[in-house]
Image (cartoon, rainbow, N blue to C red):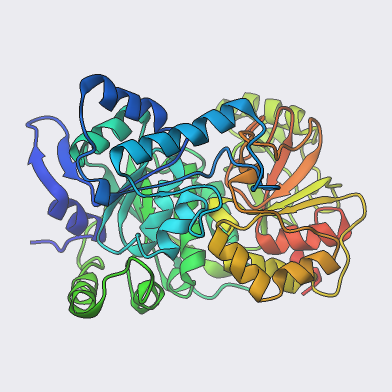
Length: 466
């Protein structure tokens, strides 16, 4: 009998029932909620007179709508204020733990789960947010769900899911200097396109993946969704165990020993079969940047935007439309393009390691005068670390003010919007039309590329400044 994949092992342990010719009923270990997708779900429970089945398996935070300045003041935007207050009311009524605005554990849902030890190997984890795939970095099955599914999990702690196919993507070899996790995932998406992972749960493997920190692995899994995958995952190893150990909600004592023993059995068996397998060479990856309006429209930073004739007929119309929106021309280089904003943050790159890398790069330098920089910690804990480690001081010396935690300029749902027609180099995950504000033009890149660009004021290869 063929060996089992990491995905198989976790999935099979969590199937409560199989519906013949239909989906499986899957038990959910951890349900994370925030203010955007939960109000309708709670309203549904209320209408049916149903309680939350496992409030102890549920955790809530406010992140999408919160401002990143003056968090001690009432939220100005009416809709944002309503959603954040509604979350507070619902969590109080249904006894769900809430890390709201100004709570020491507040932050982006996909940042606080791992840093609090709520995210653990072998779990099934869901949230009404597509980037829930982030938690797969710990060797868990983690994926985003819709509002009606949020209600289903609140009511039953289970979810009906069709079993996806499995894919393994291996990145072998050593990364070159200046190339980081964000570049790996943008490279993979540029090769597979935004539909290349559709129908699959992807396991990322290979020596280059194993060499990454947990923060780097979270960046990779976070953006697995951008190639259409149901989720991404990385097998737990000693790096994973060391990260989880001692965190607030991590197992303790004998429970810890028992869990670690189980976690070490999770990696895919040597003879496990995947529905699809791909391998890339780490040496082929250079710092990446996007030029268009989906995350698959990315190139190595020294390359030129493709020409229309380079693309297949089916892609040409959307390619032309995309370049019109960005006001770029086919065949142009990306290097040297003027940038108005630099955003460092989000559930993709708002962790302490990202802020450290950015700060170390700009230390002793000044930002370009015309560039507005938003550096936003992913959580209150990251903010505190950044202050204690002197990161905030380095930023201020360079002319950058560190903001308060939140989703910020990743999406135009709060006050941090890129103005119409302006260009932003962003460490977030999506560059869709209007994603960072109506008419905003987004180029996705790593914290190192963002740092180099901040200093020069134009798209810059970070390797030229290392």
